[in-house]
Length: 342
Ligand SMILES: Nc1ncnc2c1ncn2[C@@H]1O[C@H](COP(=O)(O)OP(=O)(O)O)[C@@H](O)[C@H]1O
Ligand SMILES: [Mg+2]
Image (cartoon, rainbow, N blue to C red; front, side):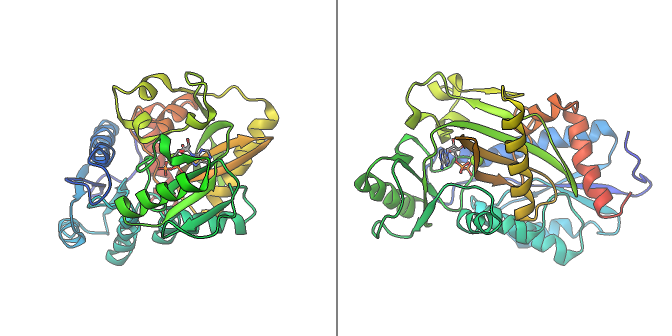
């Protein structure tokens, strides 16, 4: 049971309800629409926990969302947001906490500035470098030409996407010609610059964590690619995350808790917390790393990780003693306490 004063308080569950892609591949819609399913799971958990909850979807434009939310008062309505962009655009995610602040609503998760940083991989990496957090060497290309100052193999990623959108086996390149071809694909299909990074062959770990001030890093997840022998194909492509009848979707596994020794665990957890703090995140997050020669290289910081019951964060929370409803309750309560609502 929650202890929030239930007399007139309300939780507004904010999420993006996607209808079409704005760019990229038509199959990208599967990932975009998944947020609606996750919202349904969180809604049901909040109901079971006894919180009066309304769902307020963000559809195609901010104005109608502001109008819908305007039916509620920031005085008694606390926002639980899993909105990770809208209208097919991941990079627009920061407009939600920005608008919530303007309207006076308190909410779960990070501020607009931190969200903007995390949804811009170029700026995120700048920040990591500045704060001394290990991250693979990189360059940004807005067109398919220029001087390359990176070692191969490299990986080419859209700078503003998540959920492995724009990432397939051709993203990993071993020569300049293939690299520029892939940069061209990203720039043309996804209408944004390409981030080219040194490709770290090695184990991949995800650290799900929560807290404010003192952070709790939950049991570490390893992505097990042993079904494939080729290190250049051992990565989480879009297909491996979303295309249910694909080989990699079915054969890549997660191992949680990961089989790591104390030193590895310490290095991974410390790096994850450092990355979380470097971005200025609040309440919860997930940091993805590739591990080589004792160094966890941060490749991705998720300010709103996938919170669906079958995703990594919930799996890790479950191992930490928080089954799904308790996980949802804890995220909400971290935010309520931070805002002095409880
Ligand atoms: N520098 C890298 N070295 C090795 N693998 C990488 C690197 N960058 C990304 N990957 C692989 O690609 C996947 C998706 O990349 P990521 O940066 O996490 O994008 P997204 O934000 O779409 O999740 C990672 O989970 C990892 O398997
Ligand atoms: Mg990632």
